[in-house]
Length: 331
Image (cartoon, rainbow, N blue to C red; front, side):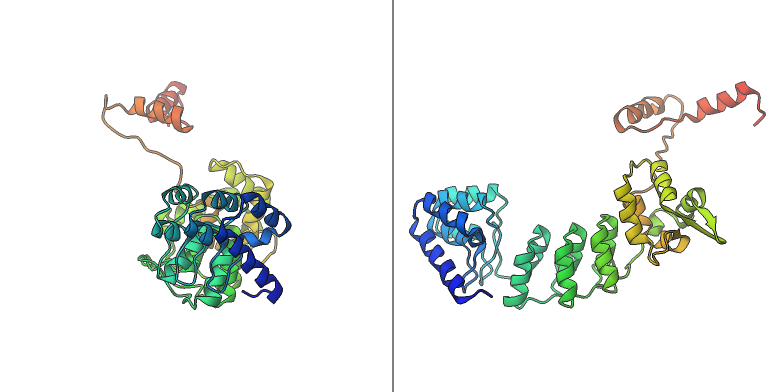
């Protein structure tokens, strides 16, 4: 498909060799000269792996996968190589493909599109859109569209493709979240950039899970007033990340700025921080654990275990109170 006639004929000839089960040495020689044939597709969108699996050629299947064959490509009927092997009862091929992540296809091309978005298979997504006539609004049982899935998985090339093809960048899933929400929670900065450029907006904001006052406290603690406006520069962001327990590299800080510094003026304002707070906090609440209970309930033992196994700092309110009293501060 979309190939010069001579290249297409050569690919079909390669499929014929696969079907005949020629020695793997000959297959290997062909792939060494023309590596792109490993994922060639004929007029029915069937790949060499489809053919090898259908004929039960286990050694050829192993060679193709070793050379980069995609194990979950779907043909025009929505079927994957695993379907072919299973239909013809080639058990060893079935077991091999499953070990390599092979899945059964679906008569629903929409389901195959969603699976391709999970796998990050941009060529499969393009093929399904070009030849399968699949709706970009197709969704799973949670009303998550292909764009939701690609964005949450961080597959930015698919996100770019779907946006170019007209996918709804502000579609809502069953929880009211848009594609950019998933990208922000997972901190996929390139997906966030593409979605924002395409007009993507937050769906149901989750700032309530932290509390706006708690989020504002961070910029008030680590930010500085510049030209009468509270903001954070790259050093402030670095210090804030260290303060909440991260170990940020310069590259991480740079990526955060690419997303949050929306007006590209070198600082992050309070509004910009509030809108993008999840990429700084990585979708996690404040790292404070309160251990409460009556005398002898095991608070100390649990706190020691948390400090030992989770790397947290144990601050005993009783110890702190006794220390203050011993110092005679009167507090």
